[in-house]
Length: 337
Ligand code: NAD
Ligand code: UDP
Image (cartoon, rainbow, N blue to C red):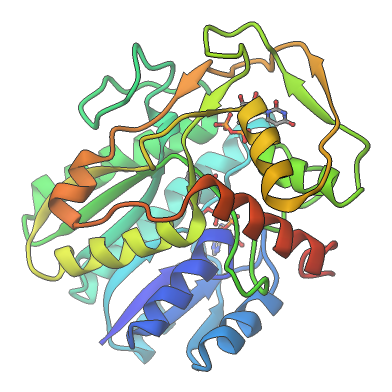
C-alpha cells in the first residue's frame, strides 16, 4: 500500500518524503513542478538510497491524476500541493482559488473513488488571522487576510463537510507555523523563486553575500524588542509530524486539527542574533516600515499535537539557522534551472 504525496518535490514535501522513505513506507509522488525542480526528487533518492514512483501530473488534470490511482495501490494521501505566495495570491486570486481548491476537489474525489479516505492536509497558522492573544490553540477563531489564507480556510471547511457526509474519512489538518531550515545533508532545502519574501531565506542570502542587508519590517510592535515574533519550526520536525499524523489516521476515523509549531516565539532581531551565532556570518540590517498585513506576534500552543500525535519539535533555533546556512552555502542558486 502506498501513500500519495502531492507536491512531494516542494520544500516541505521533499523533507517528508525522506522521513517516509526512511521509515520503509512506499510513497508515490505527484507534482507538476510549477514551484519546484525534478532535481529535488533525485536528491531525496540520494539521501535515502531508495527509489520511488513519481509523476509529473497537475492536480487540475483529473484524468492524468486518475491514471496514477489506477496504476498504484494508494491507501492514503499527504496533500502538500498548492500555491503559497501571499502577495501573488492578492494579484492573481482566481489562479490561487482554482489551483488550490479545484486541485483538492479532484484529489478528494479520487481518494473517495479508490477507497483511500485518509488525508493529511497542509494548512497554516494564517487561518488564525490576527490572533487575539498568544499562544494560539486550535479552538481560536478563524479568519484570513488574503486569498492564499482563504484557500486554506475553505479547504479546511470542505474537508469538514466531506467527513460529515461520510464518516469513513480520516482527516488531519496540520496548521503549520513558520517552517525553516533544511535537511542536515545540505542536499534539500527551500528554493524560492526570485527574491525571497520570507525572513529566513532572505537572511540566508544576506549571510552568503547575495544581498547587502536585511530589511526589518517594523520595530514598533508590542513585542520584547519591537520586531515581529513568529514560531519557527525546523522543516525536518515538521516533516516528522506528518508521519505521526498518518499513523494515527491508519488507526482511527474522524477529523482533527493540530498546531504544528514549537510553542516558542522569536523576534526578527532574535533570529538575526541566532543566525550570526550559529554560523559566524554577519547579518547587516536596516529598520523599515511595517509590512502591510503583518501581525506582531504569532506562536503556537502545540500541546494537542503532543498529546494526541505523540509529536513534538526536537530541533532548536541554532539547528534551524545552521542547517539553513549549510543548504544556502552549498546551493547558492538552489537546485538551479
Ligand atoms: P512548495 O511550493 O515548495 O511545494 C508545493 C509543491 O506543490 C510544489 O512542488 C509545486 O510544484 C506543487 N504544486 C502546486 N500546485 C500543483 C498542482 N496543481 N498540481 C501538482 N503539483 C502542484 O511549498 P511548501 O513550502 O513545500 O508548502 C507545502 C504546503 O504547505 C503548501 O500547501 C503550503 O501552502 C503549505 N504551507 C507552507 C508553509 C511555508 O511556510 N512553507 C506554511 C504553511 C503552510
Ligand atoms: N520579515 C522581515 N524582513 C523580511 C521578511 C520578513 O523583517 O525580509 C519579518 C516579518 O515582518 C515577520 C517575520 O519577519 O515579522 C516573519 O516573516 P515571514 O514572511 O517569514 O513569515 P510570516 O509573516 O508569513 O509569518
